[in-house]
Length: 159
Image (tube, rainbow, N blue to C red; front, side):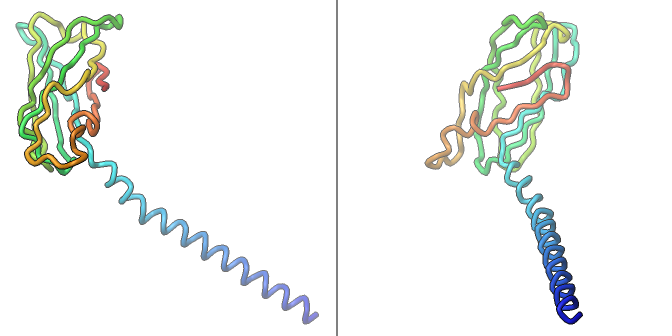
């Protein structure tokens, strides 16, 4: 009987240890998750926020957020616009100007002679210009490497 009681007590301790380890693992994950999300916020976000019809064509509104840690004194992107059938319709460059670090800016560009519903996809083909305020070694690709395009419109926006 004593052996049985010792075995039962040992099993209870093992179960308690496993429960404590499981709880510790869950707590570690819960505490680490915000840091993992924060690490992914080191991007140069570029959101196609709106595409609105104008008398002359289509007005594209972009919301850009610079969380790269590098101030950008000027950036221009080369865009390729595809129609809804997937064919290249137009290539153009938009100058977004300065993008201070840790700042959000809004920029608008009008595409004359092009109707918004005709645009199916916009591809960021590259950075036509990228001027960092204080370039550091390894920051050369900031404007395109850290770029994270998204869209709130029916137009797909990719790099």
